Length: 311
Length: 244
Image (cartoon, rainbow over all chains, first blue to last red; front, top):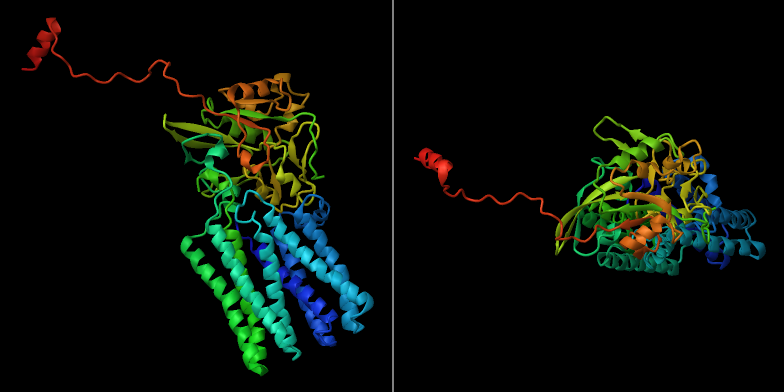
C-alpha cells in the first residue's frame, strides 16, 4: 500500500497524543502528578497539540478536504467515520478536564469524571483508527488480530515515554513511571517482532486462480490493460525494495525501541540532569522510529488487487 | 446511507464469457466514450499524449496464460465493478457518498459527497474503484445507469455501453437476482463463477469459464511437410532432368 505521509504522521502523532492524554489524566486523578499550572498546561497542550496536528494532517490526503465534515455521518458502518466521531467527542471531556485540572487545580468530582472519560475517549479513538485497517479483508497484513493490539501497545508506549519525559522535565518524575515506560517499550518491540514473524508466514487471502475464476493449473499475467502505472498500481501496488525493507526494519527497531529503552534505563540508573536529558531524548528518538515503523506498516502491506497484475 | 439493503428488488449485473472474449478492448473504449460524458463525468486523463499517461477507466481487460495439464491457453479477462451484494466499499465510506441501490443493486458514488479518502478503493479486492485525482473524488462503474433507464435511447440500446460494444457477444446484461432471467440461466448452464468467493463480497457479476477443450473440432493447422518423393511421368522426368 502507498505510504501517505499525512496518514503516517497522523497515526504516529495521534497515537502518542492519545497515549499521553490517557496516562496523564489517569495519573493526575490518581494523585501521581502534583498540581502544577505549567506542567498541566504543557502536558495537556502537548497531548492536544499532537492529537490535533495529527487529525489536521489526516485531512491532507483527502481529495476534497473541504468536505471532511461529512465524514462524521456514517458511524453505523464505517470505522473511519467512527474515528472522526470518537476523536471529536473526546475533545469535550478533555477540555473540561484541562480546565478543571490546570486552572481550578482540582482532580476530584466532575474533573475526575471528565478525566476518566477523556482517557476512555482516547483509547476508543485509537481502537477506531486500528479497526480502519484491521477491517480491510483485501489487505492480509492488516486484517489480522494483531493490528488492534499493535496500535494500542504503541500508543501506550509512546504516551508513557512522553509522560515520563514531561514529569522528568518538571523534576516530578518517579522511577515507577520510568520502569513502566521502559517495560512498554520492550513490550512494543516484542510485539512488533511477533507481527513481522506472522507477516512472513502470511499468504494472500486469494489466488490469481480464484481472482479470475480459472480453476486448476497456473494463471500467469501476460499483458496488463495499460502500459503506464494507473491509480491501482500507484496506490495498492506499492512495492518496496527488499534491501530497503530489511534496513528500515533495523532502523525502526533501533530508534523506536532499542535506543529509547537504553535511554530510559540510563535515566533510571543515573538520575540527575543526565537522567532528565536521557528521558527527554527518548521521546524524539522513539517518535522518529515510530514514523519509520508506520511507513513500513503501509509499504509492506499487500493488497489482493496486485494479483490481477501479477506483481 | 452506507448501511446495506437487506435485499434488493433486482440484482442487475453483467455476465462475462471468458470463452468468447477476444481481448479487443472495444468494451473498454466504449465504456470510456460513454462515461466521459455520463453520470460520473469527467473521467480525467492526465498527460494523455505524454510519457506518463494516467486516467480513470471503469473497465480494464487483462490477458492471462492459463496453463493446465491439458495445455495452455490465452484468456482475456475484462475487470470492472461486480456490484457485490456485500460491498465493503460502501460500508467503509465515512460520508455516505457510496451506496447500494435497493431498487436494482447498483453500487454508485455520489460525487457531491465524496471526500476522496480512498478507503473504498482499499476495501475493494477487485480494483473496481479509481480516484480521479483531478476532481478529487472516487469514480467507478455505474452499470451505465444513465443508459439502461434512458427513455431517449432505443430499447435495444438500453444496455451498458460495454455490452452494446462487444463484437463477440461475450458480455451479457440482466437481472441476476431472477433465476428465470436469460443471464441467470446462462450462468446455470455454463457454471458461471464468482471472483474471489473466499473474501465473502458475494459479487453480482458472474464469469463464465472457458469451455473445456474438445478433440472433435476440425484441425486447422497445416499438414507437416513431407520429403519430396520421386515421381513418375512427365514431372518425374523434369525432376530428374533438373536434378542432374
